[in-house]
Length: 154
Image (cartoon, rainbow, N blue to C red; front, side, top):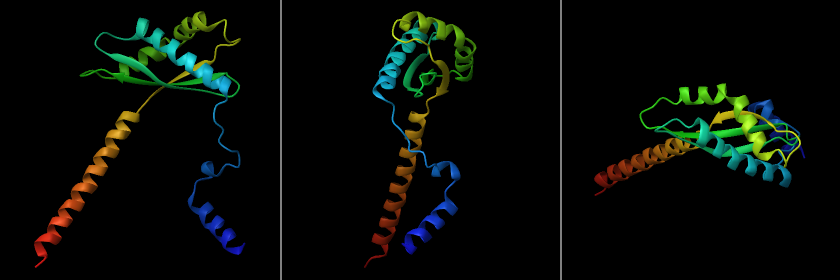
């Protein structure tokens, strides 16, 4: 029992308080998952029809709905070769109320209250590219060290 207490004390010293919440992380319920899926498809349609600039592709990669269904975090991925992404996101943010209104017209018979929308840039692809680059560097370093050891061997 003493070792566990020591470990927990050392663990708490190095881990931020935010990560040590006693409240368990809960997955979305079936109802919130269904609503998230519906929001994802309908928001993708709304964004594609009205807010996607020519020469760019805006896609909804993920929607996370809170347990009380009052807030939906919408993660967007934008493919716009040779264009700055900031104006695209600014336009979506400026028209957030219009987007919510158009969404309400589509799903008003399925939910009582349309959740507030918060848009975020989904950086999963960038993160994956960065991880691939790091793995490539590690692999190259190992190959160089392996070649150096092979050169020194009799």
